[in-house]
Amino acid sequence: MFRKRAEYPAPGRKVEFKGRVLHLYSEGSGKENVIRLCGCAAPSLVLDFHRLMKDTSVAFTIAAVKSYG
Image (cartoon, rainbow, N blue to C red):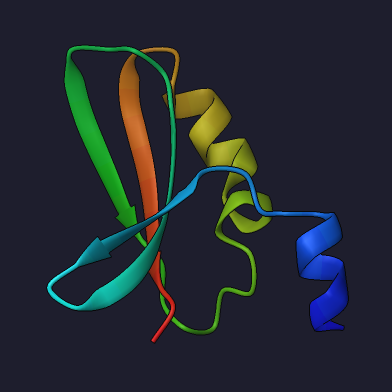
């Protein structure tokens, strides 16, 4: 299962914040920002929130963030 992660990396990027690794994905270029914090029950922040992000990114810059632990 984990071998597939290397073959199909998640879109977005990993960032470190206060010693934690976060997965960050953003869309849009609006002046206002929206941040979506994803809980541990969301297996894929991009797939689970793609429709919401696509619709919202027309007027806003929207980012989804999920902690890796």
